[in-house]
Length: 222
Length: 222
Image (tube, rainbow over all chains, first blue to last red; front, side, top):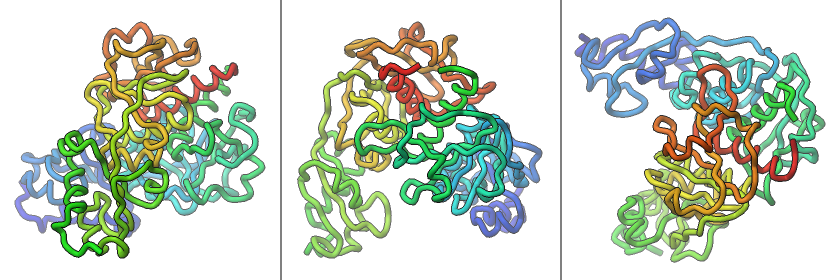
């Protein structure tokens, strides 16, 4: 039973709250039974009251009090590919990145590919928002030019609509940041989700709808 | 210029962080230029450095430091109705409630109707997640039995799929909590979003996809 905050495992978990340490150690932490059950082989797992004093585990938690288990894992990175995948540019909010990883796990066969300016998918908020999907479908990293497959971009400013798009595999659904949008080379491949007036959808909702429509059309409906 | 934390307006904003006070005063607070611009007539607005010392405004903010403006507004509640609207049961996360209000504003003509066990749509997190849509489309409150219109429920356990559903107006799209699901009387009206294996979508993503599909079909596509 760990009874000192100076324990090396606790120190590692504390460090992994910072992206610089996650990058250096190529590790990340996942909290909670659901995530630890969904996970791959851990470096180590600490359970409150079993391996470590509960208050010491709470003190290194990114969720706050009541933490029952924290596991530490190596980061895994996939290669881009699949019949349907997602590419993100400038999606800075880790909750959105994690939510899109969850949506792609449910609706696509390929990974979420992170382009420039995206939040770290192995940050605590992104891992939590993925609800375990990060373990089932690890993310990839690539510049737009490196991606195989046809591109279909979602942009609120495009002329054509999602329904009018063609969905030929392999297809990469491309989404940008809420305010800055997508690289200009994607403009010709962009369609919009039909919405009333000047309203907008957040990037995670737009990704969910785009993936739903692409999956539906690729199954041969509509 | 307000220079004392004992100022009545600052005290009101502090109180409005708590649901009990929001219910009692029938007011709520909205922070940030985007929300204050989207808002209806305020009870009052405080701008940092203009109406109030910046550090005093930060101290009552629910967002933390760097707050430039906070407005206080009366709560408005709509009546259920519209060709397409949403009913929520047991959606406890205020971020999800606000996100669904934003999605319904973009994709439906009716309000989001809050059933039992839902987060307060006028909580700071919900108002922020709505990105101003709460002002354009105030929510409603009703029990399922009080709702006019046909029901279509989304449930991960339903047999039929969303594509097979019929979308006759007026339609209420019904969604439940992630774990507890929907009232049993909605089971006959339930369809699922086709997802791979045992994967799931969060309630805000499911709502976005359901609203997209309903809006598309009601326009006469597919």
